[in-house]
Image (tube, rainbow, N blue to C red; front, side, top):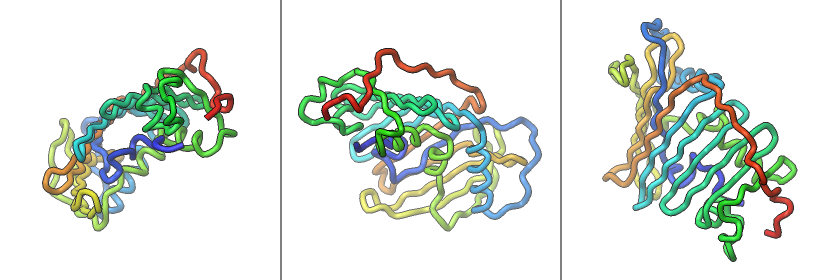
Length: 238
């Protein structure tokens, strides 16, 4: 199966843009190097149990959006890329996927012959189904999500700014990608004893693309229920 890691997905050359809330008046973080501050912010984010995430990206004439509720071991993603629409839910040791015909073919890579036959049908997967299950389940966990939010080295630190009402420290890095050229990544982390990413903007040179992700509702657990009537993928003749 292909196309299942949605958050990296079409715009994998970019990191996200992140919005979170830090406690008002929190103590400033101790002096850390830019790389160490980034690492601590990511570590704190990974340990936050739940987060609501919204992704907006565009590149090469294509658009990508995702609205996600991401937990430590479970979560949900609702994805749109041009004409494709898809949803992924992970609960415990079972994953559920659903999409329109375009998503069945292009996101999930289940079939090219007649994707309409599986369109809008919930399909379930378990660990015994192999790499497909592992890819789906990893895509909706905090650790795998924040692993993608890295700044290219060397990381430099800018002057403190206010972002979304919070005093933040901007951390910036650059990389060169074969498809879009130079990419600038700036992550704003709260200037507090428990730094968290507030915003990270990834922009390609010459306006070839940009990715923005917002995060909110930290620690607010989302109740997820298995979709009724899901068809086990092992029973499909693919």
